[in-house]
Image 1 (cartoon, rainbow, N blue to C red):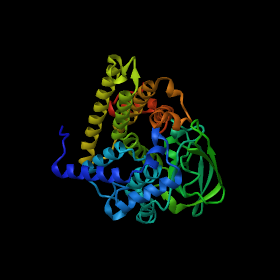
Image 2 (image 1 turned 90 degrees about the vertical axis):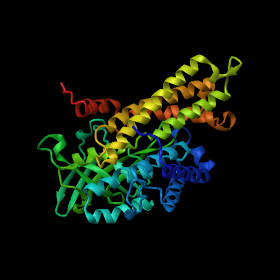
Image 3 (image 1 turned 120 degrees about the vertical axis):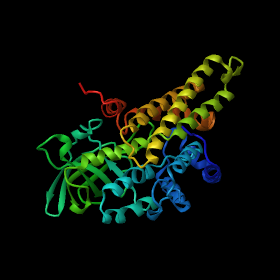
Image 4 (image 1 turned 135 degrees about the horizontal axis):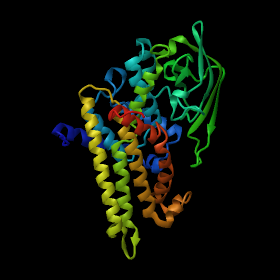
Length: 394
């Protein structure tokens, strides 16, 4: 496996590093400490700045407003982006990272031309309508119903844990259009204007005092039939491909490694028994184990990257990245808050204790959700067992 860069790739990396260093402001870094999200206004502003640079959609062709990077350039950009302290944009992850590849693969020409340019520019924001109160990890159990009535679908039901629904203009969602067969066979993929009559959006407060999610209720909402992506009752296959793209982008390798680098910096500053914690042999052993595991994670990503370079789709192997990356990031955050000692109990005392403590505390809390969203770790292990290792279900 070749893991070194060519001279041109090194020039590209240096160009990315310099631009990010000059443009990622302290305001952005302060808001994104510990995995926190930017406030919506600043998030959209940063999205549009990346768009003006031509870097908001590295993996998308230039004809749609993307960067048209090669797979290697895309990896370099993502790695350096995460290490710079730049924010992980929900506007980018939802619309560009998930929906755009789906429309390019399954959408009509009219849908592509209507939606993709505004998604990439940041003019139109999107939310993802997948989970329901009785359909989380078992997504195929969803019950939100869409009944065809002339040229419209009539949608009734509820979605939950919907990021950005209170700000988004549109939602892509899974709906049940047939109940006669297996539950996976009666699902369709719709694009819904959130300003449609009959939609109620209710924000949900999280432990961090933010409201990152929403409940969305549909009461006889009319959705034009032209907003169906793919064929009716064949949305489950589309949904699976979308989740593969989500899991591929769920844990940027650079972000995990950058988090470990922050742990090292903090350990250099904090004294333990009269000397820096970094010199303590017990701590160094813990750090060494995580360092090795981060490199293993990096090489696993390289293997999947080499597959993508050959023109293949992400595939079920992305469940490795989701399951391992989520648990690895949690372990890094565990060590991060351990470094802080009693100061790790800080929550609001940002000015008194400084950003490293705030980053450790918020990071640890936010990391608890990583093994749930995007498909719980138990589900990822089932995918790995049955679709990658070809083991029987029983």
